[in-house]
Image (cartoon, rainbow, N blue to C red):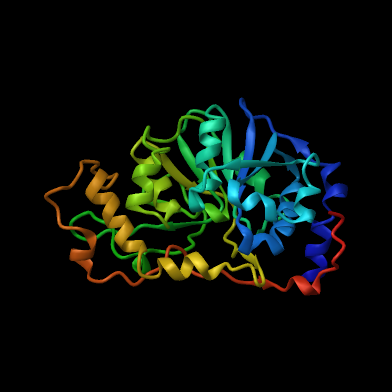
Length: 303
């Protein structure tokens, strides 16, 4: 595996043979990072640069206070396809909210900063796009299961990491696996930091699902089922650990504020999901192996 990954991370060679996209608007890959993830950030960026389809931009959003410690191997990628952009510290929402505001007419594809992305990852998402369908396309997703009241069961009872599906309302994209959002796909509140940092401060996937679904979007899984590959020692369990007890609570907050998208009416008179299902015990995303030991890779990644 290490040899194959090193080959893919020789991004300059692969970039020469990448093809342009044929979308009607700019294509932007957008992600964020913070100092605890910096040691392996360049590896993820290299896998994005090695994609077989060229985006117009790769935006790396960094909070103002985290810019001084950005490592040199990441800075060297500026001008080679990566654009480092400063922003307010919106926690994990930095991956997409600044991009929505900066480029509202663009196609946005989310990525995480601690994941290896296979060479055809972006191409598969873009080639699956169907104009006029109002869909969110994702490389990885879970199917929401409902109780007899039509509300989501606790997260751990959902159908996790489903195979390819048709277009549906109950597919929940995991944005770290990669999700493509067309221009205008979101509800008008999507950029409201005062709301999302209150209702679901550590569950950006939940917020993005609601904002797309409330605007009439459907969701479709693209490509074969695959597990994410995370870099070893990338701090990937930090947010997962927080959300072990918070994910269902934040979903309940969204239901109380906006209703469930299947019947989108604010549910002030409805009992929350926590009252219906008991104490929340599940995570935002199940830990996805395998993990790559960076020390096994050649340290010279042509970065």
